[in-house]
Amino acid sequence: MSDRVSFILNIEDFAANKELFELLQSYHSDYLDAFFVLFQYLGKGYVVVFILIFLWFYKREYFRQFLVSSIVCAIIVISLKYIISAPRPASMLNNVRLLIPLYRYSFPSGDVAVASLILLFFFKKVRYVLRLCLAVYWLLISYGRIYLGVHFPLDIIGGLFVSYISIIIANWWNNNRLKNINVKS
Image (cartoon, rainbow, N blue to C red; front, top):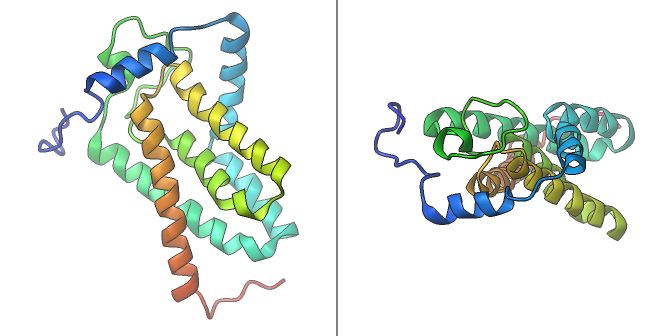
């Protein structure tokens, strides 16, 4: 349990979370190991930077909202990680197949927050085929975090929830606070 927030129980330490983690992490193959070790890089924060650059040049009307959403999301993820200080699966369970070394806090998943932000922000802005691609991207990042042994299912849900809240906050901020700031088209 964290010294910082002693009144919060270890949010990862309940049977369903651990059992689902063990079930989802039970099957491994050399191909999937290699795939998820590489694919996990598409959930990192620098993907947001590339998207922001793209939006600046090609879809500037989305730039400000995505920027604010990204900043809010990063602040919430980092804050929750340090406030809650949830341990990673390998520090709580035996026989975790840890494919990438991560030792800091687990809840919420920052990679899933990035993937969720991208999915939720762009889902209604793109055509059906791209929606399907976004959903598959999110599923692969989310499952990959468990497969790699670095997150519990609850961390995945937390990352999704943080992104959803971030977009709501950014929408409010953009609609109420940034009306007078124009980004030249």
